[in-house]
Amino acid sequence: MTPVTLLSRGAVVLLCCWVLLPIYLLIVNTFSSQADVSGFPKNLIPPMDTENVEFFMGYFGVGKALLSSLKVAAITMILSIGAGAPAGYALSRFDFRGKNLFRVFVLMTRAFPLPLLALPLAVMYIRIGLDDSVLGLAIIHTVLALPFAVLITYSLFSGIPIELEEAAWTLGCNRFQAFVKVIFPLVLPGIAASAVFAFVISWNEVFAAAVLTIENRTLPAFLLQSLGTSPLHLKFAGGAVMVVPALVFIFLVRKYLFSMWGIANR
Amino acid sequence: MAEINIKQVAKRFGKTQALHSIDLNVEDQEFLVLLGASGCGKTTLLRIIAGLETASDGEVWIGGKRIDKLRPKDRGIAMVFQNYAVFPHLTVFENIAFGLRMQKLDQSTIDKRVKRTSELMHIDSLLERYSGQLSGGQRQRVAVARALATEPSVLLMDEPLSNLDALLRMEMRAELKTVLAESKTTTVYVTHDQVEAMSMADRIAVMHEGEIVQSASAIEVYRDPATQFVGSFIGNPPMNFLNAKSSGNGEWNIEGLLLQGPSDRTAIQFAIRPEDLQLCGVKSSTESNTDQLIEPDKLHATVRVIEPLGSHKLASCKVGDALFRVVLDSDSSVSAGDVLALKPLPDRVRWFDPESNKAMA
Image (cartoon, rainbow over all chains, first blue to last red; front, side, top):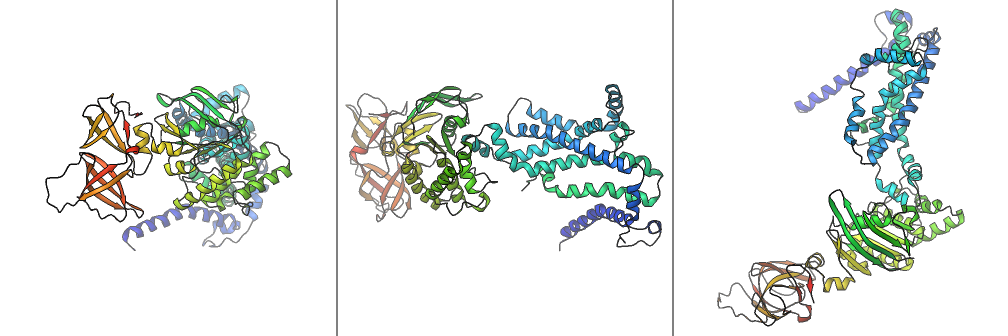
């Protein structure tokens, strides 16, 4: 092995540890008993003690926050695909004035840090009565997820030859029928992936959720508020409940997310 | 089953003029090939007929009905694409049935038509497969079957064979010709491959820089090119062109060769196909005979390169300063440096106007 390959292998191992080690420790502590969490030495293999998780799930308010989280994430998913997929289609199929500018603006929405926008947003939301509502929070999350939805679907549609659509047109379809019969079935897996990604963005988002909601807290906002004062073993359980679904989702849709950055998706 | 009339169709993309006022009639059941180099506008013209592109000016009529404002689906056309465009999420059967389902035909009619066209294209054993499980040639067959199944009045084909390898292309060429002759569908076929064009077409329309420069049968396009472009584009090797100097009374001097030609010009170009020359003598380069005998009824060409091509030998020569190609018998023992005395076949000599580049009668 040359020094270069040795070095790159070392870097790979280091990066894997960087990501995997905290997740591993999280899982081990989540499934350990209360005594084990604060004790030493640790178990290397999780003893699969579900007591912490069970206790956490039964904790007052967790169920409601979980439900809010699911609702907000679902609405975010629908809104961002509903608005993002047509935009992605238009970007990939039509030439229009200001196309490049539009693409820049799509990304620009992510250029302003949320804390900067939070106060004016909160004021505006209170004025129009959207504060502390599932829909209001979902709209903010849609704003966060939309650029990704547009860019992912843009690359999906661009990956489908225009000739397939044209062939459908010559075989008796109008534009809409061609989309439904030919394009949609082909992009469906990718659309699903980008929907899941929007879901995960909403699921993980904590800042807007904490600022804009009081009663209808989502799970991350709820945890931020209540876990700070909880015992260690509950913090681990809460963390795992947050992290694991997001990780699973991202893992499932990983190959479509690569396509967003221009890496071939097949 | 319909004729196509294209009237003064023009197409501009921004500032570039892709098509200049094209007039073209395709007769019922005719097989017309649009032939030209890439970028000459042949595909644009085809797409205008299909309705995938809108003409900037002009009219398109199919079967006596003006169709240039209609959507592709209402034009009675079917199209075969260069990259096949077989729907990857449908089986071969469903691909062929796609257009029929759009026409809302009943299932038994669909079954019958799919069966017939798939047998015609020899893909009846592949009906349950998906596009990804087919080879390029099979995909092309599916695309053709799909187009034929809808029984279009006009079939449009955009370089359908150019993605296939050479051997398969030759095989498909003959097969397509048979199938299309049987189906009696008016066909417009776009290609940049002159061999394909000549072997398949009833009539070839040669396109150059957005215009149709000649539209005639294969043999006429070959023998009597309308312009210098056609002469040099069609035929491999291309036609030879040489400048001629007037020696009065309609007699022209082409690098020593004297020929009777059109008399009303001051400048003219002489043209001949490489195979229309008779070899009358060879002067070897080793013979140090400098007093060359100049015969006024022969052209003298100095051989630069000999390419043995099996059926014949191709000699690239110099006549004066111009490149001149000659097809020689494969047994001829000519080598580089030799001087050939060549006699052009009188009825194959063509004359071109060097200003307009057009052929002269």
